[in-house]
Every structure is written in C-alpha cells, then in structure tokens.
Length: 90
Image 1 (cartoon, helix red, strand yellow):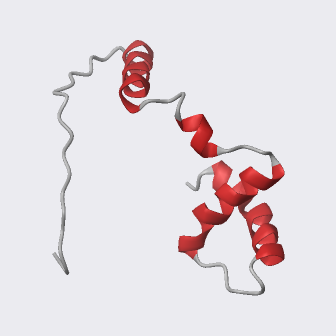
Image 2 (cartoon, rainbow, N blue to C red):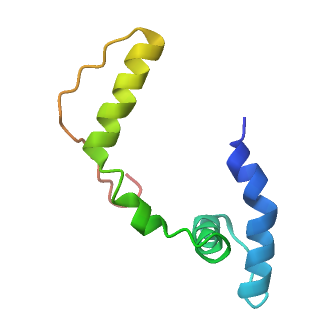
C-alpha cells in the first residue's frame, strides 16, 4: 500500500519539477529533493528549522510511550545505535 502523502503530492512535485528543472527527467532519487524544495517554496516550510523541535531521543521516547499505551506493550531500549556498513557488492 503506497503512502497517501506520496500519492497526493506526486502531481505537485512533478509540476514543480517541470517549472524549475529545465526539462530534465524526474528520477526516483530526485523526488525527496523536489518535495523539500516545493515545501520551502509553496508553504514557506523550512524542514531544517522544524528539525530542531524533534530531537531524536525525545521523539523516540514519545513514540514508544504512545505505542506502549496504544498496543499495551513494553518497549525495552538498550540505547545502542546499530549501523551496518557495506563496501562494494557486500
């Protein structure tokens, strides 16, 4: 099931791209860039400014609290970030 936000903003992103990109093809990897530019231009929404209000640890704690109440579960956090780095074909 596709995300409704992606589906609903796709025509606006395509139109914005057509106006600003001098006829270049809109590729999948361009969509997040043009979505951000569209939000900045059309709605004066600077996503970089919004980020300061959603610090990762506080956001995770809030999400976990909501999930615990909503689904009657407990989320145990080991407070360890895990990253996998793959070089080449892996």
